Length: 280
Ligand code: SF4
Ligand code: SF4
Image (cartoon, rainbow, N blue to C red; front, side, top):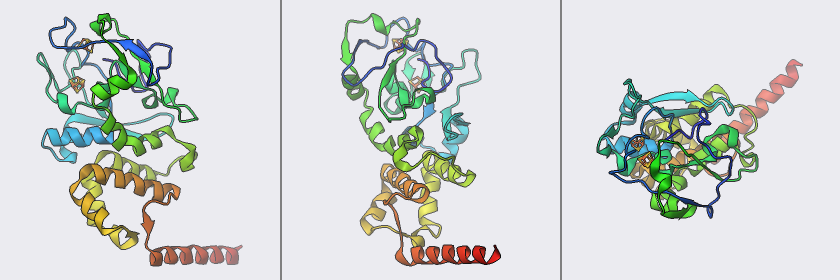
């Protein structure tokens, strides 16, 4: 397996795959190449990957991030992401690979699920200004999976590998990654905004504390049902976190400030403007 990150061009077919595109592939235990693909990778972990993996390993977010990951900054979008840390052995093996296969298979990251496909939206050089979704085919010489007769459409592969819930829960994170115009996300984010993005993307424990143990709920109007849901459902908490980010950073009408807070902010901004006018 190669990465779908921004560093490797190796083995990527110069062709766009869409949901109806067809390819032949099979992968199973007993193949001569079994587990050869799980080392020396640069795998970006999506927010839902982190959530599923830390729960699988029964770790807190802080513990999971410290043991298994390293932070990186995407060079073009200047967005911080989390990547899976390979072991310090000869092969730079994935920490979850054994001769019997992946020890967290049911909770493996999205990149591993998609392979041999890669999502274009994970590679900054392939991001389309239109936001068009397409896939890339990664053909590596060591991978014998392409010799199989089993045919798939991209759509069937996605279903078989269980990527759909991941794509649904990661949708808003992906929007940030794509820098879609719909968010007015043309300018660089401030250090503080990047920090907020990083917290929501990588650490639901911190996000939960931020919502329930700070002045957040004094400022934002959140319906009781939604609050009850995000208290117990981490995937829902993640989705809420991204809706809040879209609202706080780009003015989306999703998580609203309380009327009196909005009024106080407006008055403060107006007073600052007046003070500026007086100074000039
Ligand atoms: S077929 Fe490809 S993906 Fe499957 S184990 Fe072999 S190298 Fe890995
Ligand atoms: S998480 Fe599992 S499938 Fe993915 S690279 Fe590691 S061992 Fe392979």
